[in-house]
Amino acid sequence: MEQLNSAASGPMTWGDFKNTLTQNPDLYLQFQYEEGRFVNSSFHITEIKQAPIVSVDCGGVMNSWTEVIVQLWEPSVKEAERSMKVGKALKIVELVEKSLPLNPNATLKIEFGNSKFDTRQMYPGEFVVDGETFTVNLVPDFTQCKALTRAQSCGTSSAEVSCCAPAPVNEESELVTADGDSCQPGAGCC
Image (cartoon, rainbow, N blue to C red; front, side):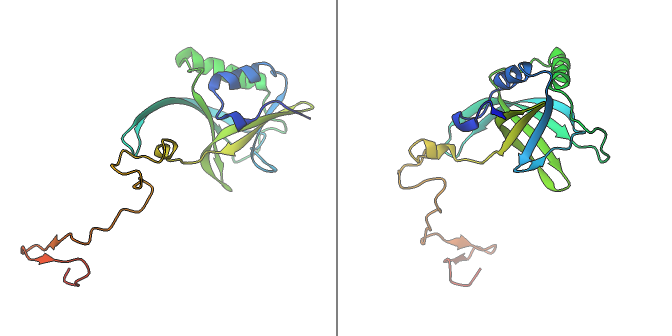
């Protein structure tokens, strides 16, 4: 058994993933989505998506990146004892790239779900070659607060106030009812 790479250095790019596949065309491709749980050998690559992402985080900073998402699907009836070879997956990639040139620097995600595993997008964590099998071990994607990576500043006036901290309570605010009467918070009139 040989481990080829690890996600410790961050998310993998589409170009790195494709290059690794190109070096192993004759191996059987499989995906492990949890420890000891593999996508059924009859899986299909149903589509490859390229998604340009533009976002503004909670600190008001604009971010942009591109993701390539490879979607896997398990048919309800097992169709094959062995999974497709890496070479077949590369032919699907070649067909996709005739219509949609994929950004080699895009972050790669694998999208998968079945009746026992909610559909989600995961990162390739490591590749393992074992005999005739090329396994892509998938790791979960996590949400993050980009502002926390900028010294916990969300563009607020005080470094003590963060987008991720509870909002301070303003005891002096007044609520106004429909008939124009005002009400203090906690007074029970609203």
